[in-house]
Structure formats: structure tokens, C-alpha cells
Image 1 (cartoon, rainbow, N blue to C red):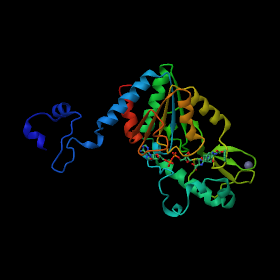
Image 2: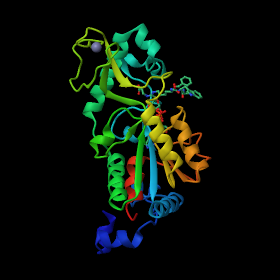
Image 3: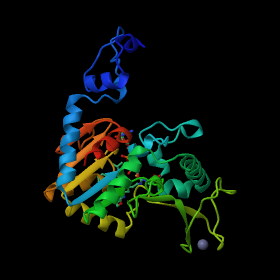
Image 4: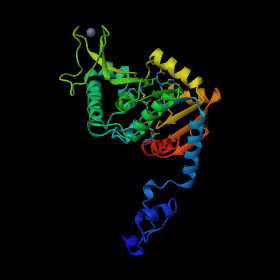
Length: 287
Ligand code: BV8
Ligand code: ZN
């Protein structure tokens, strides 16, 4: 390309031009603007790196946005195909399951299928690495997730607090027997327990209380951390959406990373606009 006639090696030029924007005829930055981070965001990244270096206890909350780059639609993303006419907030309720258990079971079976085809993305991997680093240095790290896909565990994260359960565990609605279900798809909808009763996904539905142990662990981790990071969540679903406030009220530094603004963006110390799959690996270099 153009560079050749300058008789200098591409790498030398790239280092010389690092961070500088070179506009091509079409006004696009020839140095491949996708991974160019604007100076404002770079400054925020450096500040977050400073927070990470300085803190001995970190609590991270993740939402559907962290799994988006793995190909799992978020709750905000429009439902597709035969699910397009259903509102996920309606399907994810005990009322919907009582009304039509086969329909709700099929929806969760389809989501299991989707998750099974997806792999953790660099955002998940960066968080697993961060946990390793923190724990190797004797610093406290707590990962709290609203996601039910278990991609964090696949990425190597240990013991994340699953606030809203998981769609990989199914529970009998009468004897309570719970076990992991990896066979996709289910032969019948809804699946049946050996006792003959129907089984439901091991998730928390809207209107249902969260598992006490998970909620207590999340609250305790928010109240006692020095840094709280809210990643890829719209911060609309309670009580998860209150955790950042609990941390801030307890004196923690708070950081948000999201593609879009959320109700939390004006209430945290640093809110970075961007994709977690791109920004988290960047933030982790040099921390
Ligand atoms: C309860 C499991 C006791 C099932 C889920 C107080 C006030 C108002 C309402 C309430 C309240 N207290 C309780 C309620 C009711 C309700 C609630 O909060 N309703 C909301 C809608 C107003 N809460 C409950 O019912 C909870 N139970 O409180 O019990 C009680 C009961 C009744 C009344 C009082 C008390 C139970 C809530 C849990 C429900 N189960 N999931 C399943 O998955 O099927 S919630 C589910 O939706 C997820 O787990 C998650 O929590 C939520 C979706 O939010 P996000 O994960 O943030 O995803 P979303 O799609 O919204 O946004 C994605 C974000 O990522 C976006 O901002 C986008 O910009 C960003 N993004 C996208 N790509 C990227 C990205 N960011 C970075 N990088 C990218 N690449
Ligand atoms: Zn049973």
C-alpha cells in the first residue's frame, strides 16, 4: 500500500504514528481507526487502571452486554423468529410458566441451544484473568452476574455469584430435585421429573425473590469493596441495579462500561462508552 514507496518498514511508521489520526481520501483514519481509542476514553482507561492498581478488593457486576460479543442476544435486543411477538420480561415470569409451561420451556430450550453454540469472548477471559491476578496477590475479587449462560465459568471464572440463577440447572416443581441439563433439545416440553411432575429452569423469574445466599454475598461484596465495576448492564432490574449505589455509599470508587448511557452513568466516578470485549482486555494491560 502507500507506505511501500516511503522505503520504511510499516512497523516503524506505525510506532512513529502511534495514536495519531491520519485521514485517508475518504476521511477515514488510514491507521485502522477501529482499535484507535479516542484520547478521552484513553484517559478514562488510564484512570481505571490506576483504581485497579490501588485497590485491594474489587467487586464486578456483569449483565447481558458482556455476553453480547459472544453472540447471545441481550434482553434489550429484539427477540427473533417465533419469539418476536413475546416480551422477554413477560415470558420470564411464574405466571407465564403457569399459563403455558411448554411455551416457556421451549423458549429456555432455545436459549440453551444458543448458549451452547457460543464461546466466551475477550471480555469474559479478561475478567477470569483479573480474578487470577487479584487472588494470586491476596487481594479480594468478587464477580456477580445477572447472566444465566455460564460463559464466565467457561472462561475460567471461579464461583461467580449467579444472582438470577442459570438456565443449565432444571428443578422439579414438586419434589424440588435439581440437576444440570446439557442434552439439547429437550425431547418433551416441559421436561418431566422422575416423580412425574414438570420441571422448570433454575433461573429467577420476575416477581420471584433472589436466592438468599447469592443476594447476601452480592450485598456484602458491594458494601465492602474499594472498587465496584458495572459492566454491560442496563442497570434497570432490581435489586441488582442497586448494588453500585450500595458500593458508592460505602465509599467505593465506581466504574461503568457500556455501549450506551444508563441510569447509572451520571452516578459513577467513571463511565466509559464502549464494548466490554474490547475495553476490558485494554484496561487489563498495564495493571
Ligand atoms: C424481586 C433470569 C422480590 C431469567 C432475570 C423495585 C423497583 C421496581 C421494580 C422492582 C423493584 N424491586 C423488584 C422489582 C421488580 C423486578 C424489576 O426490577 N423489574 C424491572 C424491570 C423494573 N425485579 C424482580 O422481579 C426481581 N425479584 O425483586 O423479588 C420482589 C418481587 C416483586 C416485587 C418486589 C420485590 C427478580 C429480577 C430477576 C429476573 N430475572 N433473569 C432469564 O434470564 O430468563 S432479569 C434479566 O433481565 C437478566 O438477568 C438481567 O438482570 C436483566 C437484563 O438486564 P441486563 O443484563 O442489563 O441486559 P439488558 O439487555 O437490559 O441490557 C444490556 C446492556 O448491555 C445495555 O445497556 C446495552 O447498552 C449494553 N451492551 C450491549 N452490548 C454491549 C453492551 N455493553 C458493553 N459491551 C457490549 N458489547
Ligand atoms: Zn420431582
